[in-house]
Amino acid sequence: MRSLPDIATLLRTRMKALSLTQSELGARTGLSRRTVTSMLSGEDDYKVTTLLAVLDRLGYELAIVPKGAAAGLAQDGAFTPTAPAVKTRVQAARERLAARKTEADKS
Image 1 (cartoon, rainbow, N blue to C red):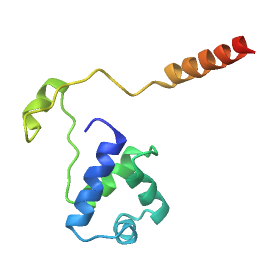
Image 2 (cartoon, rainbow, N blue to C red):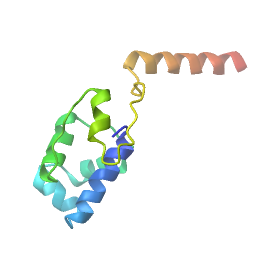
Image 3 (tube, helix red, strand yellow):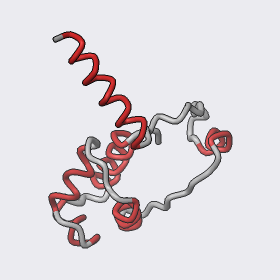
């Protein structure tokens, strides 16, 4: 898994295989339907504890491994480690400031 959309796809596929609705998953996890819907959209961020609860109810376990070891876990062997893609808060703030400066320079 490399992104929230990848995780959302996995979760939706598993829910379909188990014939679970979003409401049923929410009831099993103690999460609101809105939270489940947001999580399954693949666009909104959420807490790790929320992910752990959903994975548990869908019969999955979260495993964290070094990037080099992840290749051995891929079913098709096609996993290639990537550079970190998640921005830190500082990186995101710097990008916003740079964008504002660019906009101000255009004015």
